[in-house]
Image 1 (cartoon, chains in turn blue, cyan):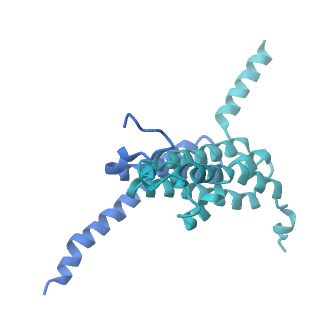
Image 2 (image 1 turned 120 degrees about the vertical axis):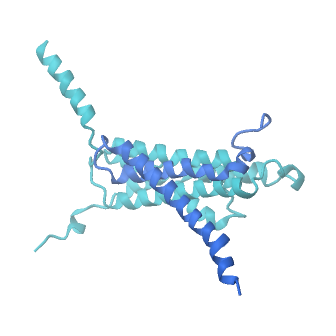
Image 3 (image 1 turned 30 degrees about the vertical axis):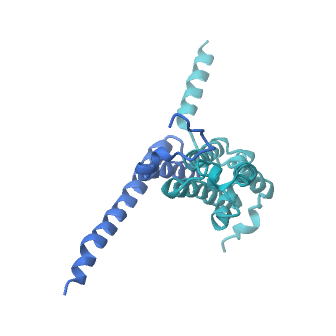
Length: 80
Length: 156
């Protein structure tokens, strides 16, 4: 980590917690999308935070649903 | 009969070109400073995040051609990163590349972040097709501050 050169070398320290990188990505997308859609700046950052949470929890819910399907539902269907 | 609004709305070709050269600049050129600045911050944040996580290897038109099609909508910033990748990393021998080339999730997330930035800028460029001059984000906080300072000035 000490010998890491930003931008030249990939951030391999994040390899084990890669899924946390969804949060800054969802935030960046929300900043751009809400800038286009929001009519007022007064409600802008609130809308950005809400959209970020919606994206993060939505993807987490899809991941959990797929995990349940693969781990439990498919083995149940395969039982004789 | 309702009027055909398409004929009234001019296509802002210059703004679209500026929006590709530097994300958000198209909106700023149409007098939408707040909107343009937020777009610029958002897209450059995504590009920087992607380059920080995946390294400059996150943009590679040779090996990730399909991803590059999505990424290139960010404009010259992404082309510059690709150029750096091709001049610094590509000539290295395989053993030398080992520390610079991202593997697995880190590379995927870096590539995805910059591709999302490109696709968001594509949406921004589409928005410029129907954007109106000066239709900026309304900020009543700033207006109230302005009113208050004007009021103070009037009293003095």
